[in-house]
Each structure stands twice: as C-alpha cells, then as structure tokens.
Image 1 (cartoon, protein in one colour):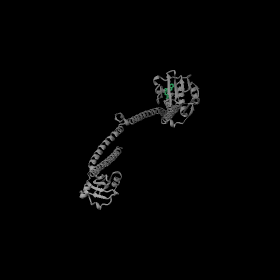
Image 2 (cartoon, rainbow, N blue to C red):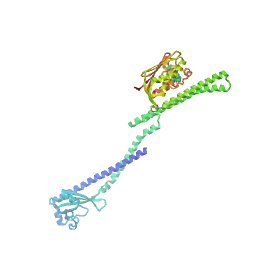
Image 3 (cartoon, protein in one colour):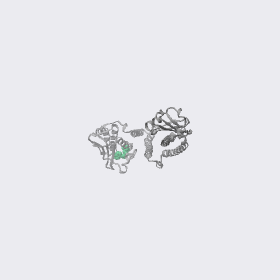
Image 4 (cartoon, rainbow, N blue to C red):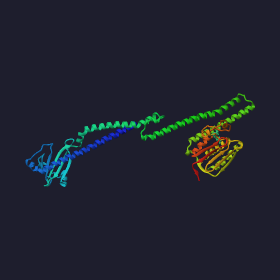
Length: 438
Ligand code: ADP
C-alpha cells in the first residue's frame, strides 16, 4: 500500500511539474511576442513620423540581413521599397495576413516559420496617413527557442521541487501508515498509539472490538471449564455405580438402587446437555433467525400451566393464573421455555403448601412464597451454573442454567427482566416487553 501511495504521489507530482513548466513556457512566450510586436510598432511609428522611407528609397539603402527588414507597400500591395532586395523583383504583398489586417484595422501582425530551425519571423504592418503601409519583419526565437533557453533553469527547479515533493510525500505516507502498523503490532495496547483525528474513531472501534473478542473468549473459556466440571460429576457417579454392578459387588437390592442412581444421573446429564445446546443456540441467534409471530402471552401461560400442574401437585404447591390477553411479537417455542423455566423454579424452590401466582397484565409476573433468594446472590442467579444451594438444585433436577436461558430469551425479545426476592418470604420475577401489540 505504501508503495502504491508513493507511486501515486510521484505520478501526481510529475504531472504537476510538467503542467507548470508547459504553462510557464506558454506564458513567457506570449510576453515575448507582445514585447517584440511592441518594439516593432514603436519603430514603425518612428519611421512614419520622421519620413525616413522616402529618403531610404532614394538612396537605395540596404540593411544587413539578420537585422530588421523594412518593406514599404503601396495601397494596391505593390512593394515600393524593401531593405533586403530590389523591390522590383518582389511580388505583390496584398495577400499577406499582416497587410490585410493593417488595411482594415490600421495595424496587423503575423508570425511565420523561418527557414532557420527554432526561429520565427515576426511581421508588423502599419497603415500610414497617406494609405501606404510600412511593414517591419524581425527574425526571433520561436516557442521552442524560449523553451530551450529557459530549459536548464526549468529543469533544475522542476527536479528540486520533484525531490522536495517526494520527500514530503514519503513523510506524509509514513505518518499516515505508522499508527495502523503500530496498532497491528500491539493490539493489546492501542492507547500507546498516537493517532491523527480522522483515524481515532477507527482505532476506538478496533479497540472495542478487540476487547469484546477477548471478553467473549474468556467467557467461553470459563463456560467450557464449567461445562466440563458439571458433566464430570454425574458421569463419575454413573461410572462408579456401573463399575460396582459390573464387578458383582452389589447385592440385588443395592443393584436396583445403583441402577436408579445411574438413571437419575443420566437424566441430569441429558437435561444439562439440552440446556447447554439451547444456550449456545440462543447466543448464536439474533432477531433475524427467530420465527417471530403474534403471540398471546396469557394463552401461552395457560398452556404451560397444564404441563406444570402435575409437578406442582407432586411438590404440594398450588399454582394459579390471573391474566388478560397480552399480545407480543415473539418466538413461541422460546417464550414457552421462558415461562416454563420461571414456573419450574417457583415450584422447585418452594415448600409444601406454598403458592405460585402467575399473572399477565401489561407484563408477565411469576410470584411465589417459597424459600426466596438471599440479597447477596440476587445479581448472580442469572449467571450460568450459579446456584444458591447446589444440593437443593441438583436434588430437584436443576442444571444451574435455567435463569441464564431466561435472561437470553428476554434479551432476544427486547424484554426487561427484574427480580425481587426476600429470603424465606418468596420471589417475584417480572418480564416486561418493550413492544406490546394491539
Ligand atoms: P437451577 O437449574 O439450579 O434452578 P436456575 O438458573 O434456574 O438454575 O436458577 C439459579 C439459582 O437461582 C437456583 O439454583 C436457585 O438457587 C435460585 N432460584 C431461582 N429461582 C428461584 C426462586 N423462584 N426461588 C428461590 N430461588 C430461586
């Protein structure tokens, strides 16, 4: 890239130098022309004023070549006198451009190529008071000549400005590229890189993204470690009980107990794998990948109640629903999961004879009068694998992922989730959707 920028700079500089050289040559040639014609005009004026031509004709005065050539021309174009040759051999001059112009406008000019390389003949004609015309010709340098004369100076100045420009261009390119190179070398410390204003938002974005990537990597690492640990516990139990049975170390009665343990641990493993899969699916999904539809939350809660009722009965917990239709735009399967997880917790972390009240008004509220959550743990309960009481969670089939899943589902639905709990009194979890459909 640096090479490309430098090459572009060099190309632009070369074009600029070439243009300015051509432009200045043209301008100085124009000035030179103007000066030559001004000289010739004042000389012609002088000749007319002093009436020297009659005298020169009379004396047959001839000027040396390479000097000014004076021609006196009659109104009909016939040459009366010429300072180079005998006028009688000269043809009629009526068709010469400077003569035509002078006849019409009083004075005329014209430039014609000289036989000498790089030189031109400048003609100036002036109509005198008696109608005859004085024409003065002068051989002078052409544009090429002017260019040739100024070439050394032009070349030196062009070359030095070219060099200076290249040095500046290189410096600019370096200053332009340097922060990007520094950033690439040391992504960990972008604050050490001095950047110019236009690059600051870009650097800030890269820094934020880099931090995000690191944070996500750390979360994933922790999650993997937790998952391995969580899966290891039931698997160790399964393996231990199975080994006892395989070695014939279990009596018939014990064998049945071990088989039950194996079954329960396998169930835990399955539940955990299901939750892990669901969480990673939720993490990878965005609003675009959900199958969104108009859903009545209270109808969904009522369906969920039918599924949860046998479990509530088993725990001796009374579940009731109070709801008015509330339409939201959401993914049915995920919202079912959210409601189920909240109700499941409200039943499992309850006591015999306890209550769960589910209400749908302008939000979804799941309230229970169960064991409650200590204040210091309330923030952490939405974290993966966090449990207030590990043994109680495991005993009731918990995976420690239920509320993490709930939080994610709420997030992808743009819903706010809040928790209010008092230890020993109960817990209230409230889900408020930002968009309610009519
Ligand atoms: P688990 O599978 O262990 O239930 P969750 O993520 O659903 O995992 O909940 C995390 C922890 O929060 C639980 O282990 C429990 O200690 C606490 N908890 C969740 N809901 C309630 C509730 N309604 N009442 C009391 N404690 C709760």
